[in-house]
Image 1 (cartoon, rainbow, N blue to C red):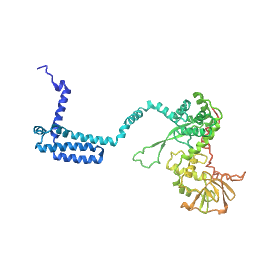
Image 2 (tube, helix red, strand yellow):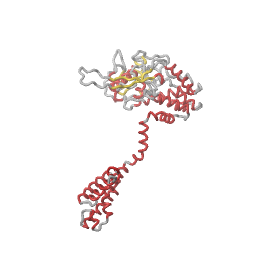
Image 3 (cartoon, one colour):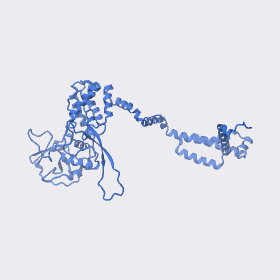
Image 4 (tube, rainbow, N blue to C red):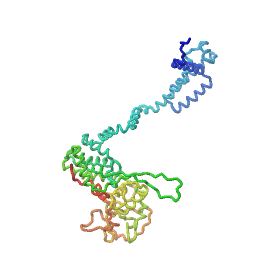
Length: 475
């Protein structure tokens, strides 16, 4: 007797199976023959499932059929428990199916759910794989960057891919206050230059054009740095709870000669990557650069329309300083004065915008293109047979003095009261370029009208020392 095994201790698996079978038999004995109340509960559950998961309806019907068959047979035999049911000659299969009906019902609900969201399960391996890659991004980042570089490369060449990888590893903006002033903007700009260069430089080698486009501003990866700035509000007399300071970031440029740094970096990278380019590609790249900048300025638009009335109301229309003149139902304003105030309002609402309100900064060009693209701005494009340029600008001569770069607004579309200080015959509207040779525009700081130019180059006047690329300094 001492060597007799104790199943509950020496054979736990057997004990667990025995206990499981006991509970299965107990559940079968209790639920194999349903009552009328249980059947009504099943009907209510099936109605709910049909409303939300109708795809499993065939299984709901099957489960109900098993229950009804067992209940009807038990009532016909006059029994209420499975043992009496079998003794009276009832088919035991009916009991088993009735007992399994709740599992059939559950399976129908699960099937309906999976059918409804089945596409998620199809994508599940890809989702799980993506989550795994994100979680282990540091391991996969080099491979992902290479795939991205391969995808972005206009020409599937190893040297082109390596240059794109260099840009991806140093995601600086194309400029700070001008075109593409966002992180990674230099790569976007360089790829745009490559596309345009391929369009206009067909006689030249395509690979050379793409490599030159990716190199033409490469020095900026050494010049641009990101710094953190704490955005704080005005101090309160009594501080109950310290306000959490919002940390913002902005790009800055090193105070060095950009042209020299760019030329040196082009030579260094070209030597490292084994790139040799003919001098003929650089004039093509210079032209493609100008076209790309113009395209990008038109894309970096701001919601300027909502500020128009407020800006016009704040301008000066009386002596000694005048920002504009009213002639009938038309209001002529100096572009640089208007864009400066408009830029200040944009910066007031969002101080982190890459804009500079000073007239020496080319950043206001983005604002100028915003005015052109915003159809709610009541700009006048033709006045007495004279047409505005592509930026909506005229030149005007007021009492013999020439003012360049002037906007014209239609006051009938703006509820604004502006005094009329001059007569209609004292203001003459000219198309841009119509001035006689030798005639000089009014040149005071407040009335140059030089804050906007339709033919600006990449970074001239942007507050950055030297232009990054001048069509010289080939590899």
